[in-house]
Image 1 (cartoon, rainbow, N blue to C red):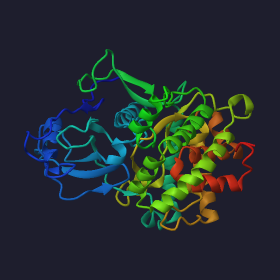
Image 2 (cartoon, rainbow, N blue to C red; image 1 turned 45 degrees about the vertical axis):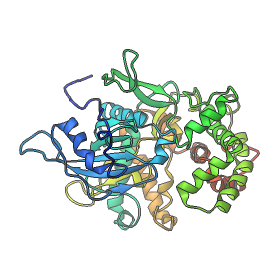
Image 3 (cartoon, helix red, strand yellow; image 1 turned 90 degrees about the horizontal axis):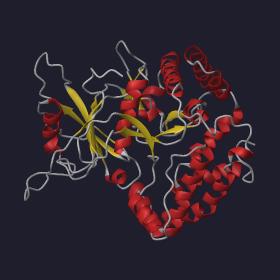
Image 4 (spheres, helix red, strand yellow; image 1 turned 180 degrees about the horizontal axis):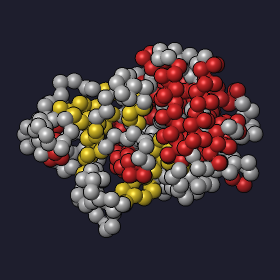
Length: 431
């Protein structure tokens, strides 16, 4: 592995909070980003005046560096600051940055932002965990701008998507888990020891209130099951069991967390909770063990690297210029996991749905063009015949749809209930 790249592994940044008695201007403290860029690049940055973008788990700030002329340094970077919902969940910043570094080293055709540095702790100058990544100019493949492009322009993005999937499915793993940095010796999390490689560890997934979940189970001398797992059935059952236990042991906290994330009423939270109590056990019963599902060639591995939110809002395309139409960045790797081949290779939902504010169905001729183009591009770039067999198999596509629902979380009980109504809930999705 080449080591000439100074950013081969992101730097762990240790910048203490302001001096005692000096209060932060805000959380995150945007006036302190200059200390971060000074530490990383040796230059200051201007304090951002607004949030560049915001999601459920992160706020993004565009930092303009005081880069000297002809210096081999970026002029603009993005600071990704974890919101409270992320710090209280199982979404791991360490796994996110390790996965991005791993993909950059092993999948050169996947456009992943470079991670320059990160801090997974809350007690720092910014006041929240954060990472600093390269900036990619572009627009999300989500909503009106992309959906109004002519078909040929959209197919440029579909071909790029196929090449990205081909790259990710070339990587094989023996178990299911999330990627973390590997270190040669024992060390405390705050020590700035350079990693030596990568390893698989517990799942980084969207399970809120992780500390409270752990404490509740500890009182019963029970441990949480976050993997790694040896088969997809154990992954899906563990995810569903997590939420079943959460809403039974901590119903008040579950409703409180739901209200904070969605701004829905207390009555709606109670309705969802009661529905989840009925629906989740039925979804759990639909998961088939490998011995009972002989037609699934992928459930016990080898597994492939999966970005479990590889949807249009996490794909950035260039609207103009020499790269017009091409995907220039894949973002939000915080819920990445090694998964069965069908979870990544089968047709994604956005081939059939136009992800706009109305979530309308895509015109049939356009959906067909997306799928045909995707298959043809995979044929050019994959070495594994199983990939093409999986993509064109309706049973594997049904497995993907079921898995997408099973890991959503109890808050999406309505979606799971619709699946159970549309399917025979007494059988697994593959039958």
